[in-house]
Image (cartoon, rainbow, N blue to C red):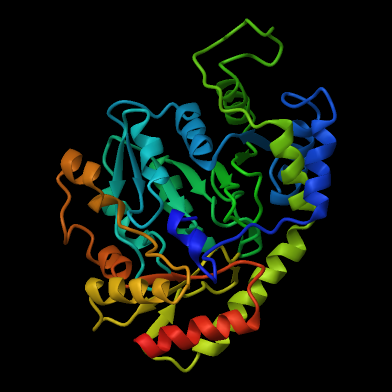
Length: 376
């Protein structure tokens, strides 16, 4: 959440925590196993079962999970990974962490995900993988992405940090590529406070991710035996206990979020000045945020004015996302500028994330929609 949101009457995001989560965390605090204890593998096993993958590897954040996958795949200096500029910056930073280069392609103007039709033109002899992001809980269009990957012998990384519970033609988000990752920040579908999870059915990738997140230790080695360079990316039993309690309620949580999204959609159905993300046929979105796009006649200045006015009325809101290629570091490092990816920029300059969480009432949503449409 933004620091300024603390003063909002209608918050942009809030975690869905009940007494069950509190009791689960307190129970762990009463034991001697605060980390590297039984809750970690229990959470991993249940999460893998939920996602339909052979393995799940917990870690301290979704960003850390992406980094683990990139490193475990052997992506490094001189390599390229094709990805989207319309995302949270971690999906590109994880590539830079290993001194590889993110190569952006523009997005589909309706789904806001990476446009598969543009991927093949971006492939070079240095391309090692495609990192597709399931933006706002909408799974990327993976059939053509997988066909391109097979043709060019590329790995697929699925950033599902925003998409727990989503499905693509019956397949759970995170299970479609060679490896996927989820994030558990408090505004996500389920939270562990901070945390993430790598999911894969590739035994070697899972083994490497487990080792890398635990200071490079091997499965059978001792505490001071380090087989490779690694990191302290572990998730504690405290976090995993919270995650287990949340996962046990995931159906209820997702249903509540869908209900909130449906109330917004119904109230905005006749409003031609805004549109929402198109959901692919035979796919189920998992609502992470509720984002509307202003029609083309609105400028970024108009959008920013709306954000300011909504906040003045006590309504939490934000611009989701700032294009990654226009972030200062990417401009300086790679020479990107306005116009580099025009579809991404056209969407990003006109998006508004509205309040979205389980505690929203119908009256709250009526207030948000009324103020938004009044200010348009």
